[in-house]
Amino acid sequence: MKGFILSLQSEFYKSRKTLGFWAAILLPLILTLLVFIGFYVKSEKMTNMPGVLLWMRFSGAILGIMGSLLLPMFVIFVAYSVNSVEHKADTWKTLFSLPIAKWSVYSAKYLYALFLVILSLGLFAFFTIGFGNLLGLLKPELKFSEYHMEVMLLQVYFKLFLSALGILSIQFLLSLLWADFLKPMGIGFVCTIAGVIMATANWEYDFWFPYASPMMALKTMMPHTKGKDNSQMVIDIFTKDVFVSIAISAIVFIAGYYIVQKKSVK
Amino acid sequence: MVIQTEGLTFNFGSQTVVKSLSLQVPEGSIYGFLGPNGAGKTTTIKLLLNLLQTQEGSIRIFDLDFQTHRKEILSQVGSLIEQPAIYAHLTGKENLLNRAILLQISENRVDEMLELVHLTQAAHKKAGNYSLGMKQRLGIALALLSDPKLLILDEPTNGLDPNGIIEIRELLKKLVSKHNKTVFISSHLLAEIERMATHVGIINNGELLFQGEIKDLESISQPLVRIEANNTVDAANLLSKSGYNVIDVNDNYLCVTYQSKEKTGQINALLNKNGYTIYSIHKVQKDLEKLFLDITQTPA
Image (cartoon, rainbow over all chains, first blue to last red; front, side):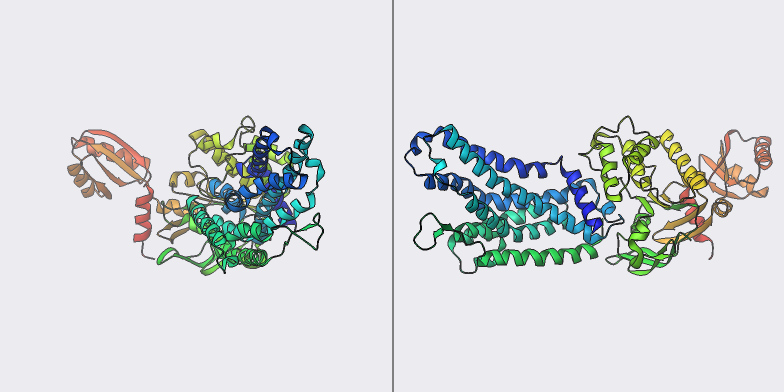
C-alpha cells in the first residue's frame, strides 16, 4: 500500500509539467470559454428564453462536442500521455527495478490516468456552472438565475465518466505495451469512429462496444420527467452500456496486470 | 557471494542470448563484466534485476532468492542500464527528487548526490538539455541515491570524456574500499576494466569464457612486443630462428611474445646487428578480440 501511494505521488510529481496533465485542465476551460463567448456575443437572440432552456442550450452545446468525439479522444490521449512519459524517458526499467511491487506501480499509474479523466470532467461540470452563472451576471437579460441544474450536470458528467472507463482501460493497456504514438492512437481513433457510427445507427448490440459508450450515454440519459412535475428532471445513470463499460474496464485492468508482470522490460 | 547465478539461460525466440551462465560475484569486489557489443551483457543484467523473466537456471542476490525476496533485494541494489533513464522535461534535481519520493529519501541526500557527480551547477537545468556525459553522471547519481550495497552499472563510462571516466573510476574504487560496496560493471573495453576491477568475467555469444580475479586474467592476457621494421617478413624469420615466439607478421609490423625489458632490448640489438631498420619497438597489450581467441582456443 505504501508503495502504491509513493508511486501515485511520483506520478503527480513527474507529470505536473507535461501536456497530458495540463490538457485535462485546459480542454474544459477552453471549450466552455468558447461557448461562453458565443453566448455572450449572441445574447440578444436569447433574451426571451426561459432559464431551463438557456441552461439546456448552454450545457448542451458543450456536451454535444464533448460526448461524441472529444471525450473518447481525450481519454485515448490521457492513456497515451501517462505511459509515454516512461516510454520517452526509457524509465520502465527503473520503475520495475524499484523496491516497490509491480502491482503498485501499475495500478498507481492507472489510477492517475483515471484521476486526470475525473479532473477534466469535473472541471467541465464546474466551468459549465461557473460560466453559466457568469453569463447571468454579465447579461442580466439572460435568465440563467431562473433555474439550477448543478446536480443534473454532475450526474451527466458522472455518467460520461463511467461510460469512458472501458475505453480508458483498453487504451491504457495499448499505450503501455506500445511505445509509439500511432498504434494506440490509430486503433483508438478507428474504434471511436466505429463507435459513433454504431451509436448513431442504433445498432442493437452497440452497448457491447466500449467506444460507443460515451455517445450512447448521452443518448440514453436524455432527461425525462418523473410523474407530472416538470421541474424534476431525472437522469438514468446506470444503463446497460454503463455497466458494460465498467465491466470491460475491470477485466482489462486486471488482465493488463498479468500481461505487465509477464512482459519483458525492454 | 553477492551475486550467484547457476545455469542461467535466456532465449529471445529461437536465439540463445545467454547460455548456462554461472556468475560468482564476491562481496566487496569490483566485478568487471567484459564482452563485445551483443555478447549478452545487458540481457544478463536485466535478468539479474528481474526485468526479464528467468527461463532456465537460478539467480541468488545477497544469498536470497529473487522470487520470494524481490523488494528486499531491490532496496539494496542501484542500477544504471544502457542509456540512463531520465525524464527530459524535468530538471536534473527534479529527476533525483522524483526518485527520492519513490525511495523515501531526504532532499539533503539529493543535494549530496548532485555534488558528488558535479551537477550542482546544472541542477536546475532541464535534463533533456544535458550533454551525454552529464546524463550519464545523473544516471550514476540516481543509481547511488538509495546508498545501495550492490551497484549494477551497464557501460557507465559511455559518452564520458577522459576526466569523467577517471572520476567515475575513482568514485567506484572509493565506494568499494571505504564503504564496502560491491560493484558489478559491464564494459566492452578491456583497458577500462583492467584499471579498476578486482574480478573479471568475460562473456562472448552468451557464454562465460573466463571468470576469476584480475591477476588470473593478466596471466592469460600476455603482452606483446610490436616492432615496425623495413623488412618485417625476413625479420620475423630471423627472430623465429633465434628462439622468439612470433605471433603476428604483416607488411608493416610484427609481434612477438613479451618476456622482459631486457629481452626486448636484445631483440632490438639482434635486428640492428643484422641490418634491419627499426622504426619503432614497444610493448602492447593484446586487444580484446585476440584475448577472446586465446581464451576460446585454450582447451577447457
